[in-house]
Image 1: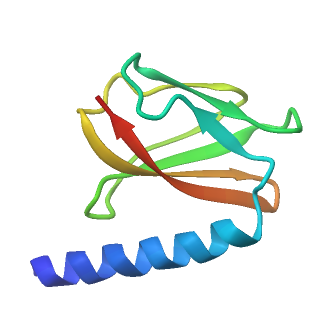
Image 2: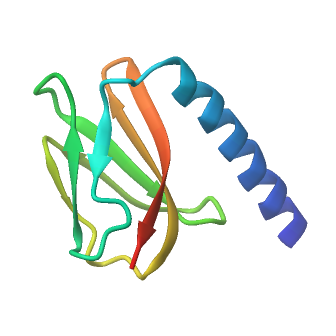
Length: 98
């Protein structure tokens, strides 16, 4: 069963890297690593963004619509996968919480 989680995670990361290379150059976030309990999403537009955070096993741990700021203080320290979607653009990045 652990092997299935590992394969799923590897597939997700590969797909995310390929998708991120194609679009989403105007989307981003900071700081990373984060120790303040908040991240700030950057974009060229003022549209709301869908932010989804997954743990390393691929389980969704947070999903929220934001315009700029996201409170992540409820998440434990560790490594996560962060996906930001705005309209047709999206990015997927590694998020480190200290």
